[in-house]
Image (cartoon, rainbow, N blue to C red; front, side, top):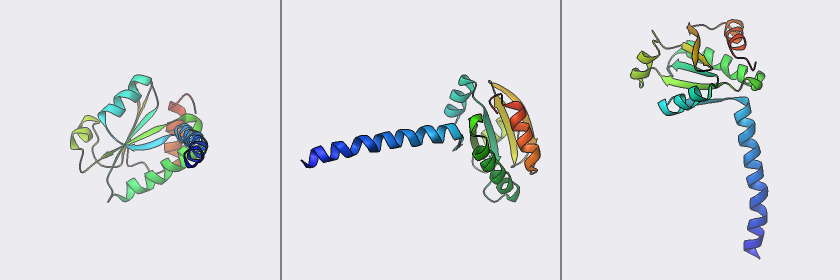
Length: 136
């Protein structure tokens, strides 16, 4: 009986987890940068924003709030944000030609379409993202 009860509880739990995963995916995600994940997103032609940030950077914190709000308000864009740690991922900071932390680099359909350093105006960031991502 206990095993049957566990099985009947498991199916609704799995359905709920799948729905949550789909919802989170539709809203876009923020992840730590890995080359493997970046390569997959590039191969899919998906919109991906490279966010070169540092935990101690006040400009990065302002950008983070703007980007989080953007993802909430524009879930149809399916934007993935990959965070490159300015202090610990120097190879990738150099690769993306980021002159400093708070650099944002947008890729869509496998191409770099926008580059910005220290931008903290929500309107400028939102306009750049919506105008360069077809799904927005």
